[in-house]
Image (cartoon, rainbow, N blue to C red; front, side, top):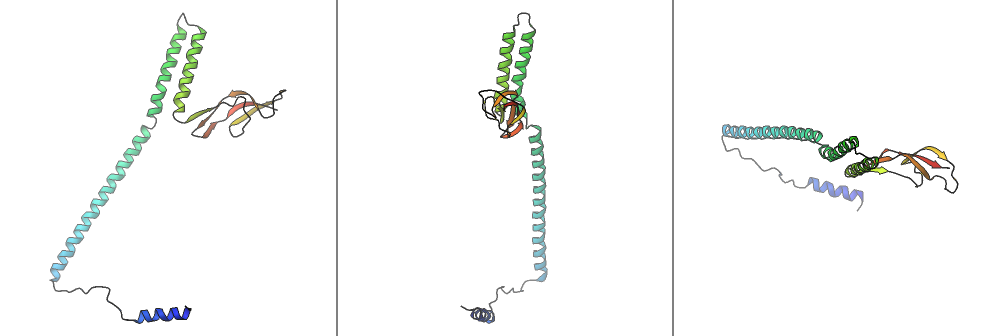
Length: 181
């Protein structure tokens, strides 16, 4: 179909008989009654609007209160997980102060407390980065020094001065390492 044919078809359709799209309203009722009916509907809509505004305000207040409570209590589980570790440290300190304390028992208690601590924080997404013996990764490790060692390939982590940590996959602190040259 050409453009002229399309335009002619549209012109014929637009000049054709028009149907009334709006129904005719018969004004047989009393105008005062119609006005009263319109006022009642307007009052009803106004009341609906006021109720909706009040509901929205209540919802806003409730959400603000819930958010405040979430901020206040966000660390509850984390702190509760750390309390047994503190208790273990306190117990170890008291045991170290006793007359029959030995360095071996204090070391053993300290190692157990450290394991308990790592276990607790790993529940919340904290991972330790201990790259000893691995290939140097500049994304996770920070080289403090380079050392030439025979029999060791280049870019191998020789010693870890300070372990690094990742939280939910994001590096918080790189591991401080000495790397082979």
